[in-house]
Length: 133
Image (cartoon, rainbow, N blue to C red; front, side, top):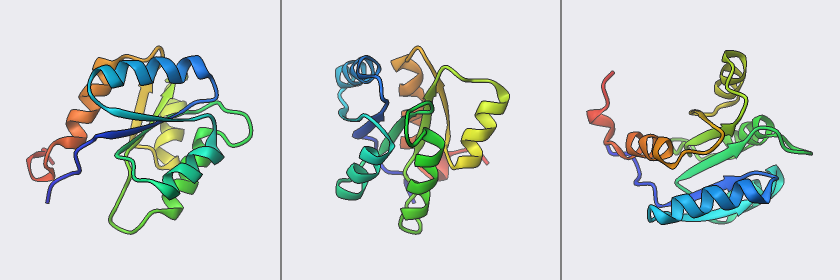
């Protein structure tokens, strides 16, 4: 069994500048990037179109990234886990643990670094039979 190849990325952040930076950097690397300005919009978009990766801000008004991730996980089809990575300036051990408990796959620190994101994507794209256990 192989992992899906990341082509479509959803960036969820209430700050339009943060979304723009991530979109531009990832589009330069050849990815298709969509943007959501909050949790509810991201839920609506995920319900309507397929994404291969979500980069999720934690601190958003209304529905934060942790709550949004929990709702995404509850709505997923069995056997299809959408990779979700926090995109946050909060990278303390406690924050990382909260992200993992909410169902996120990991944390990428702000400011955004497209090379770190590319490393994450490489891991997601790696066939599961070649990932060390």
